[in-house]
Length: 92
View 1 (cartoon, rainbow, N blue to C red):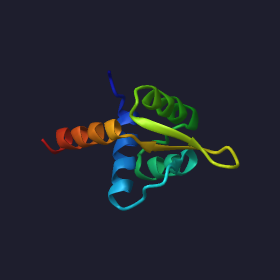
View 2: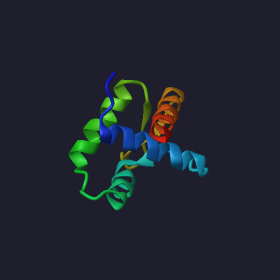
View 3: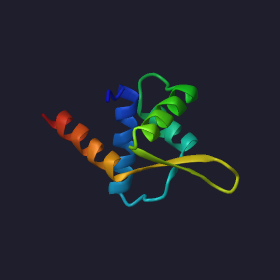
View 4: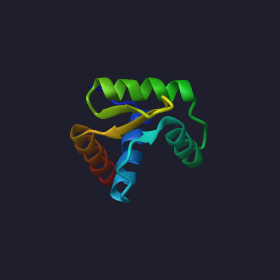
């Protein structure tokens, strides 16, 4: 499976948040804000949602909806391993 640059960033951000103790699923709009705060060019919400659904289909993310039906995502065990592999590749 090929992982896009945006999908890599998503996995790394979610992994970093988990490492800091944020274990709850992250709402899409919060994730979008985090990505855009760190990027030189804005990520569009539609592109992010497409990437998130693709990662979910690959089994790297779990999808959640809260009581008001807001979409949120969290890493699966496979997603954690993939994020670790990406982080390792970046360190080389």
